[in-house]
Figure 1 (cartoon, rainbow, N blue to C red):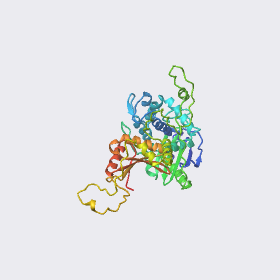
Figure 2: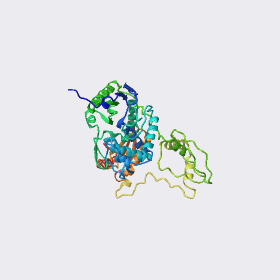
Figure 3: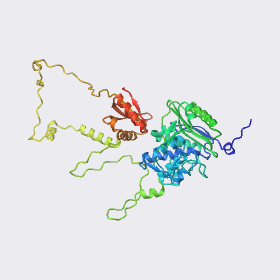
Figure 4: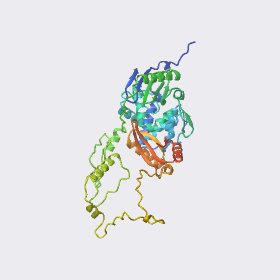
Length: 467
């Protein structure tokens, strides 16, 4: 029996690449730099920019997005949005990541940049900043359009950035189902996620011109592999090929490799934005200020302004790492100064307010017994006094690429869940693969309640037991 495939699917060129996600080393390629139709792999970039925009304060996950007729009229796969409808960004993100909804992807792009064309330009700037040298985006969803092309290599690079740049959102790509506001949606690649041990994403794609595409990642122990396939002939054959490539990757990748995360690109702004941001505001007297060039690199350290003479600078609300270093230096300098006791006393109390004398060692506190005549007991050294009342439990709300991001997440989570986390200790623990954000000093019941409440708000959380 001869089975005839649709001509466009049968003719879709095949390409593949296998990468060690930890180092970015390429372990296998086949036609990996040929520009092909990415299909819905495009949504990986749409979602990356959505995460970036939220991080940058351009939009929030709770922002209500007004759905345009352009977004509502996108062809399937779709969420079924209506023109004029308002829906929170978080639901659009879930629909695009899990169901690969085209209407949701377009609505995300329009919400962030005002139009899909402007969003596509930002996608291209971001791709260039990542080193995706052979990719051109024309839309936010990936439906076939002239010039909308990418490569297996470029999509693997993008997948690696999603894993390491936004680990707090990466779990979206392995959810079997998700609440998308208007309805619950199911994952487009559940079979692969359930059948391959360690698989946790990332994105499928299909159009007639592209064939069946997939960027997949799996983690086993300390090893993580990314495998990308373009031009599969069916879902089943594509999944089988990706499993074969992942197996190849785990065989070839060394067990112990130092983690070298990709450099996270900054916000890729358009030329008009750069010109606007690099021009100074008018002076108070109405004269136009000079043009100021903004450095492309992020500011590593920001010194506090000096206080005016005769005034005391207020304490900062939040202490960043650089400021902590300044405080540590000042403490060390103060401790190094040998100040005579009499100078300290004169500074603490004026002459007309003498310091109280030390209590005689023979003096005992009042009591109802005859302790005053009893021999003085031996001093007991207390190494630790616990008043925790069983508060030996904690919760973890994620692992982050830097200490700053972990501290930021702890602060945001504490403000989000004041009822159960008030009075806890916020603790950042450095690991080889990042920084854990923990809340400590909870009872088991409170830790369980806090996690359940945070998970209901779609915040990652798990409990940490004593020790």
